[in-house]
Amino acid sequence: NYQTFANPSSNTTSGGNFWFDPSVFSISRLQAANNGGTALTNYPYGTFPRNGLRGPGYINLDLSISKHFFFTEKANIELRGDAFNVFNHANFSNPDTTPGSQSFGQISNTYDPRILQVALHLAF
Image (tube, rainbow, N blue to C red; front, top):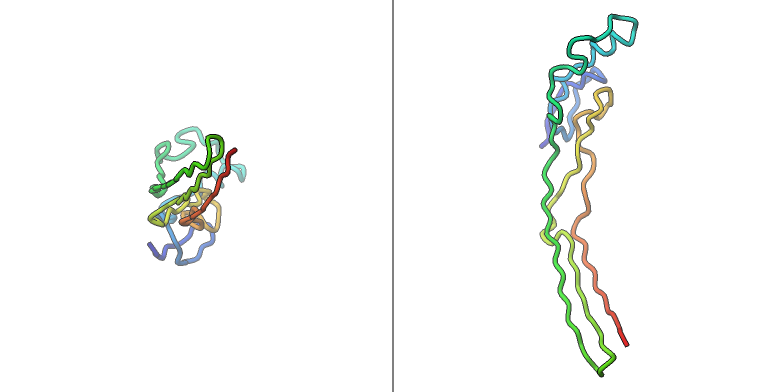
């Protein structure tokens, strides 16, 4: 979801992969308290609820197929194929939630794409 918002940390308007609008957050009271202002006694953390930000969901399906081939009583081979994230769904990591950061509210990483592997296991 590509949107353009005003980033209060950099005082610029920029486009990016924003998960939420960073312009609705303010750290001005915290900056004023750090610059010798009055202590933050009421609502020191603002009015935003605890755990109010949720990141994107994670959808994943892994699959494994194997076949055993028996040669003797004690010797066998296992042929195995594994697929991780079978449907290759794009899973995005959590956005930057540091209010003073230049990338506040943006998602900059993804999790692993589809991974396939084949294994051959000899047991005797």
